[in-house]
Length: 417
Image (tube, rainbow, N blue to C red; front, top):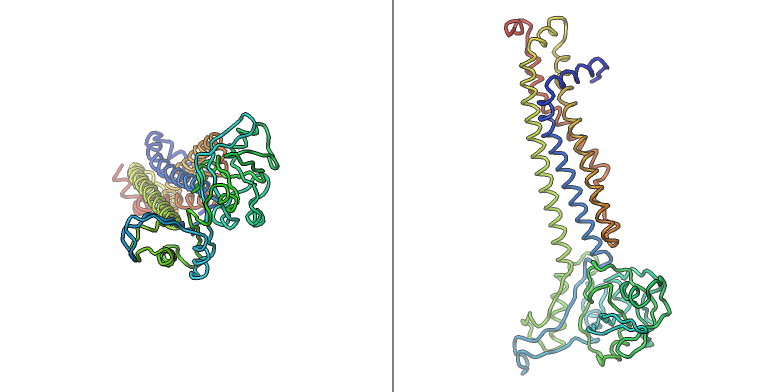
């Protein structure tokens, strides 16, 4: 369908005859596409922000902790306290082939890190290097803890960003610096890049201190006890299936009743990630339903107004037919006006929503450096898809009025006059 300059002039002249009516008709399309793009961008931004929180954390991880028993077993009373130990790591590794990583952690709360006359409250974590496969520290400066640190019981640590800011103001590289915690001097070997919004089981990442597991055990008399067993499932296996096997092994090893579910606490991050995925899929479907519903109502409005326009132009269309215009020419004219109206309104809606999303993105980035990688903008192909939807709506909205206009005959036009 080719349109020359005269036809373009005629289209805009027709739409501008009743400016208020054209504006109100176009506003339905504008608002529909504006809301669709704005909600899609907002949903993408929210997902991106939550993605920053979960970045570096394994989505197929599970955590096991001991709780007081609730059932008597093998002569042992209910309410008994028990603890996981290092042997449980080997038991799980050897007996559950579906497990990829298995390690343990210990925590110590309420300590202060001291440097000179400066101090800050911190949370201590004793870990093995394997733990980094579950929770990536995103080291900003220096290195992670390694196997040699564990084997030699080194007094080294990886610290959070706020500890560096408080104890070493103005410094960007604190590797080699020393801090004291509970009377023990530790050498800093790395600074964590985790943000305060990041998910963590070991306290606030900004004020966390990670030390070798063996060093933690010696410093606080933990011996071979572990507070939490940390595992990941191999690809193709669900943690919800693996945790049942782990629970059976742990209960048998520590004389816990096989049916005592409350004695073994499971935290399944896979379930959390699944819920989040389902939530965002649901939000996306809801956004499309709302946006397309609004667009459809706008298209119906365009179709109704075009019907009124055709009726008002009955004489004009009859004269066109009388001087040689074919039904296809009339069809093209009405469809062109309908598509032009919807495209102008739709593209304006896309442009305005993109500007709003850009403003929101700048505000989020300026208020929180940890969310600097989050994006609220829609993709290029989504914008193209929205433009195609607008064009199709213009065609659909104009078809009814166009077919009605095609049926107008010169004689009918004269009678109308």
